[in-house]
Length: 116
Image 1 (cartoon, helix red, strand yellow):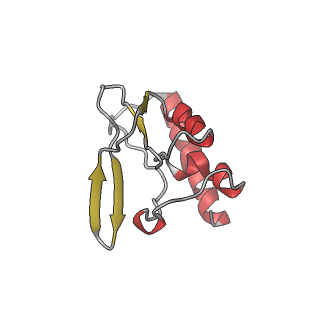
Image 2: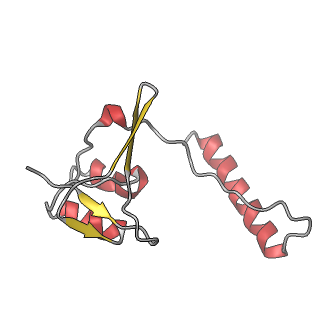
């Protein structure tokens, strides 16, 4: 039997695994003997055969493409939209922050144009 690799969050709580299918959402507290405090280390543990893990797809896309990892419960893991950036609506943002926002907006526009 495979065991789940659990990840402890900075606040001390265990990361709960979230699944969704046909409008039904489920969160579970994974069971397993190995609890780590960083997803990158958990990925290494999974690659070494210590158990199964729960990851953002972008973090393991190369491993999936190369056949090092296999997606489980695919019907319970709908595709996620891209990241969102939230920031306070201050009246006078710094020049650096304005430049960062312009860069992010430009990159997002290029991704949409390319069809990623």
